[in-house]
Picture (cartoon, rainbow, N blue to C red):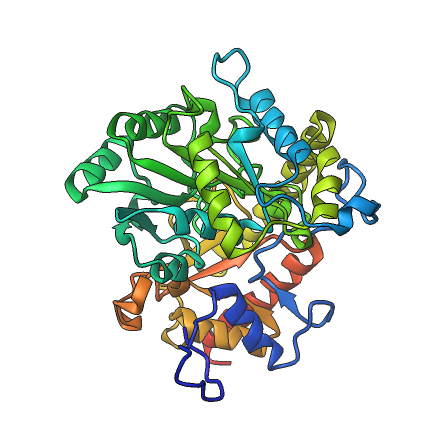
Length: 422
């Protein structure tokens, strides 16, 4: 989605904003600010970053050593890289012969930077991506011209399910060398876990197709399985299996403003993405990397994840109940993330389109994200009216319980007025 701007010099192109940035910018033109209590931001892509009942204390101050005034290594501080590797081994690789080491980890200044490094390191290949998925993938898949993005549509009527058998067919028939995906999926909340995730990793291993797995919501799991899900559990050899993972403090630790993320994968891949980082971004801030280390301790990870589950499950139930009562159609309840991706098709025509719904919600000082932004469309080869998700909207239960409640009440009133013409 392009936004009208002043004319650019001929040397530059119009760069589209991601979905969340677009809707936030539009809201700001109407007076929205992050601390304005009159607004309900149900479009936000960050969780409530405050203290959660039962969770660990929040870190609000950090010490800056004299050495922290220097650049950090592009691949990250060795001690943080080792802490990340130790955490993955502790959570997912107990008793396994192959273990992650510091050399299997690279630190970056946020998730988008980690993904951009990986994209810059890809060769002349076909890279599969799913529809719908994270909005920022669109420009990422378009800007690096070495590889060709191949869309893989998911079926809402099947609750966005996609089996390992179907994955194999896509890889073989389309000649895919890599798959980019979020798990759990942003925006649908669909989750690949357990035996199915093991089959995905096994398929990638047998066909030598790299899984690029965005696991930034992997601690927001709502089924009765493990509280954290990662493809790392099903890797046989950490240096040979083509599995590359992305995660960080942004969502799963709720330190969004720190912009500390990591890439975990074979040593050869870590060398490649670190080389890309040397010309793309130069590395993450040294003081924040050092401060992140204690957040990865067993006690911190366990208590934070338990607090997320207890508090966000309550908000999830609240939003699902409101969504159903408002007449929004759900293609399965979200099994992960803090989003509800809902169809507007059964609402009055005046608000049955995602962009129209978004505009009407703005008038109520509520922000949401139209579904078409998640119809990842590199190069804008499909028109707006061709999007399968133009009648969808993503609602976030990432904010506080009070904000989610008030936002849902306002949307309910909006829908009632359009339904009965009042």
